[in-house]
Image 1 (cartoon, rainbow, N blue to C red):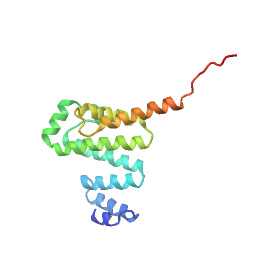
Image 2: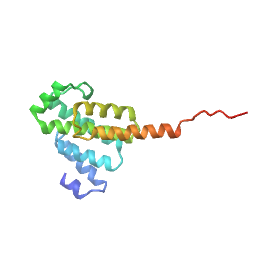
Image 3: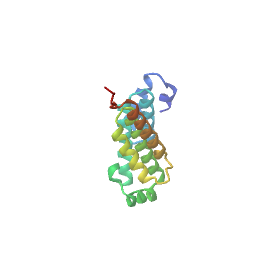
Image 4: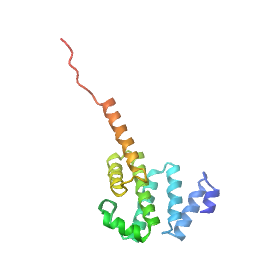
Length: 154
């Protein structure tokens, strides 16, 4: 990871990150490094895969089902087990949502944001604000670009 950081912006940085991933495939710091590398290189499909892998790993350690099936009792149990790991899981879910937005997959992104809002009622992670922006943008786009009928006097 240190070599990848020293090589930031160079193609060799990916090789160092992938080597770290081979050595420690379940290390969350390595996954964060890979995610950031892919995201900032605009390799969004790769970034999405890493975000989802991060959720899968941390969710497994927390005993969580798929993100869409999480209920409050499961969330509370996960929080009592490891609040830090749960926060990591929720941030990975938000990261996946952001990547999906960038990929133009608005419906999939909104579903994740809505779930995050349900799980984070105080909006500590900012999913509510992000959803407001997405919905506002969609509304403006619909109003701006949808064809409207107008009657002309004959």
